[in-house]
Image (cartoon, rainbow, N blue to C red; front, top):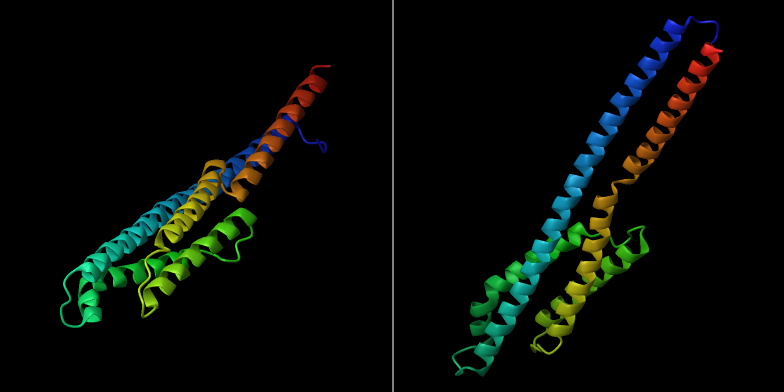
Length: 194
């Protein structure tokens, strides 16, 4: 190889392999951390959506009991006293979910699911912000939220399972480099022996 003795060629190849291994270790470590953060994101989204549904159901139950109970003072104030904490919790978790999602996501399935989740959160806001409380549409909104969230969770879980794009590309490159190195060494060994 370029008129170098075999020991020098071996040293150069060993240095290249050591550098490649170090680079691969760095990339794998970084991508592993990204996958770990993605898994935490998945778990947090699941918890936030569960909390939203819990707040909605609590508001629905409390609203029904106040609306069908004996009239006391200002009905609206009585209702707010009963559901105020859940309304605040609903708004907080809704805002957290909205901040987690990207409505302009590149992947089509996830983008559509993200927008369905955001539509469901707007639907809750429309139901609860109107002067007249109409609880009939909540089941459909809950179902839309759950179904869309399942799609987002599945898409992101698949990304965690497959690995991030850089990791996958690096894995292929490392495999190709390894195959090329083995072929070179075999070729070099065969040519030296003849």
